[in-house]
Length: 139
Image (cartoon, rainbow, N blue to C red; front, side, top):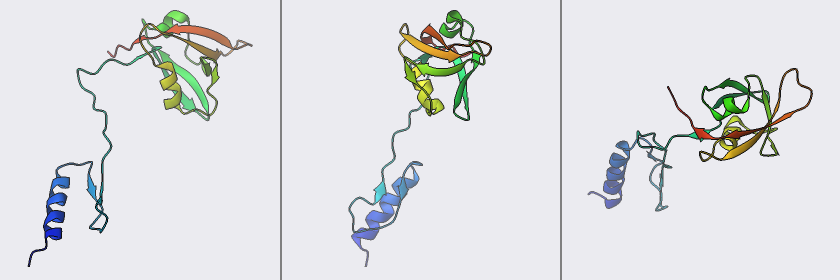
């Protein structure tokens, strides 16, 4: 005798095999026994470009540094240099922030300004630098 519950379970598992982000966690009396996948953003040629200051950053032991400044970027025009340590963004201390958190603060709509406060090697006081965000051009 074929039980409807088993047929439904086999059908749902078969559907799940076609969707790599879905996974079955087994039969249950609970009506929701599948973990629903969260949508994952997929880059497409039609996706809007990322806008930001135009600098690559890295984090090491809680210190966020500018690694590279892109040519023709807002960071370059404003005078940000490699090895500058970012300590505040728009007046907010970034101490304890992840690199992703800091990057999201530096990104924004093209043409908007962001205040980046940096410690520069060889300079005693922190520098407040206004940077105009622009689309990031990947070459």
